[in-house]
Length: 353
Image 1 (cartoon, rainbow, N blue to C red):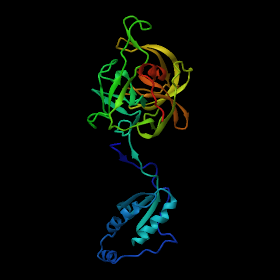
Image 2: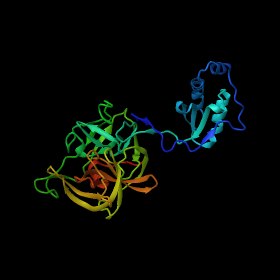
Image 3: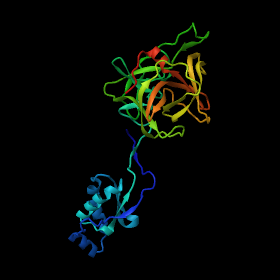
Image 4: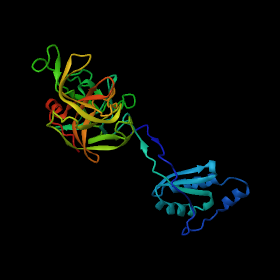
């Protein structure tokens, strides 16, 4: 992942503890330290230069700081059990106990968003094609092809294969394509399709990964949501099952999605197997599912096209149920194609871990 940033969560100091412990060896002072003190020089920079690499190599170490504001050295550890080791190491270096403090603080973690570069890739992250951005829905194997699934309208031409190249997160960040479109059925006319329109049962397409692009099957990025707009990835949903049989979901079924624009959102199904005209086009998507949050929260935005749709089964384990392709103008309702219909059009997909 790229463009990561360090941050400190919560109050840094749970307790500031004197670094000298009763069972620690007494600190010693080197001749050079004594000479610096006699000359009126500040010994802290020298002590910090010695202490930082030693301190940060210790188990449970979080940070080392020359705390100029408080005229001391400051060391962070993950828990109280790590204090003794830190104090012992500093004493061994001859750093006086009166010159430093040790604080218990939360570990500092890397932060990445759904719009950052991810290798290996996983569901829910940003992809780029032509001049547009969409969401990588989920990774899946189709036969021997290592692939990802996104929307048909997230290709250069909706319906039909024209070998669209995909980049992650964008071609300007990484100019090497990660995948190429290999499957995108054409839209049909007649039969169940309204006169003058063209239809499919899913807005889906499959892209085959290039050999050098790493991917993780059965992983969907988890943000700190749901429904709070965060794009910060805090964990991973594990796809442990997939619903290959359902097109009529019970009203109120709680489903989720993760997309590059609005992150993790969820809502209940309101209408199922809905034949849906796509605004501004002559396309009708047949037998689709509508989802709305009970609090009328925003659940979808531009760029979320291609998002995975899933039910949480237990803990972070989820069941994949479909792929999101649209929503209303206010973003309070999203529409998805059931996985059963995606597989009818793209073939058998293995999306679980």
